[in-house]
Image 1 (cartoon, helix red, strand yellow):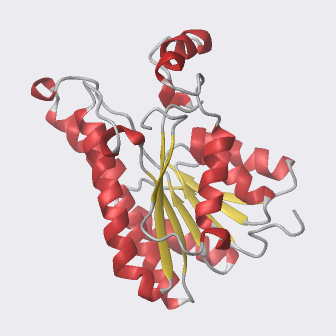
Image 2: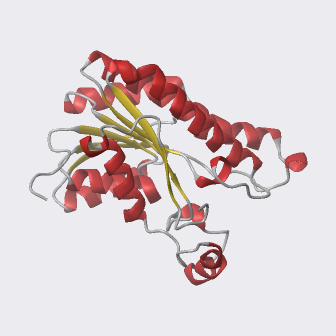
Length: 254
């Protein structure tokens, strides 16, 4: 690579303390971006910043709950104040929620999943777009999922609904704001090597033995593979991709 794709860019990553968010934040930083990671757990965010800085990158963190609009406003304003702008956002914050049949889902658990996974992405996009359209445009990538939009699994009604809604919202926002110079897409990972791929108390070997047989490629995806997909969608290389939902799941939904 002759020149880092995101040199001089400011990137905001929600859910940046672990998993896909951390891997993507690190990848953006390696490509020259100043990265702000946001989330609810300050210690996890601090670890992401530490890893990026140890690798020679530029990063900072802001504690925020994406389901709270005042927090989202502060998150975007803090990013702009620290680094002078906002060019790329990866809206990745999400929770898996309660695993239960629809008739047995707890209403509060249902609301929590939709508030974080769907409303949180809406609020994040709302305020990211407002800044971007006033300052020459930008690129947004939302983390959806192959569950809900591309495959249906039992016991995951709230999660599947939130992610199907997010994919629909991504397309709607993409059409609404491409004229503002804001290009919006989604990535839909399948099982990848992050905390959400594990059941309680499950080892890596147990997780792999459970998931590998249902993935045609025969393995769980790496976080770096998902991060590379996010960076491509956010980059000028994907400049003609608008409202796209890019599945990366080892062939599980092929």
